[in-house]
Image 1 (cartoon, rainbow, N blue to C red):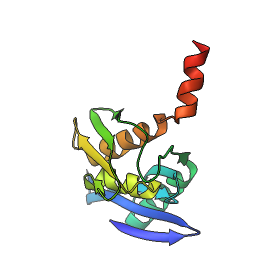
Image 2 (image 1 turned 180 degrees about the vertical axis):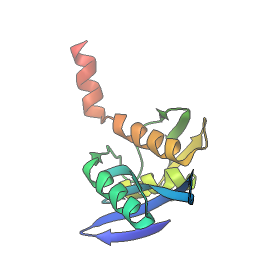
Image 3 (image 1 turned 120 degrees about the vertical axis):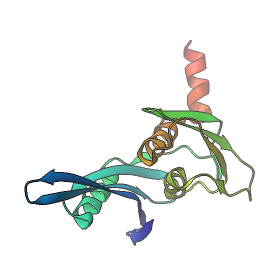
Length: 158
């Protein structure tokens, strides 16, 4: 995993995958890069770039990550409540943790959580171990988090 800092934005390359296509002259390689961008203050985005060169796929992935940024509801240095996120066969359980616990997560989920600014959390990957699906499942879980005020206002309506 590589990391860059630009304008208070932290950018990470989670995974680069090489794919080969066999043609008459030999093998033709293409690359895909899973990238994460965040400001460590509650904003995070995830992007997936594909190109014939590694640098170009990373650039495309980071551009997409910056475009797909969302606000994450935080409660101090953790999340407000336990939640499960899904993407394809990838499922991940995110649990809030007390101060000083740290990020107990695999590399794919850790990149998304660090970029969001979460420092105390417990995670468990329940489904596929595919890095892309685990990262996207973590992102979808963070996207569905609500604050206590939003939950109370929904309860009053019903």
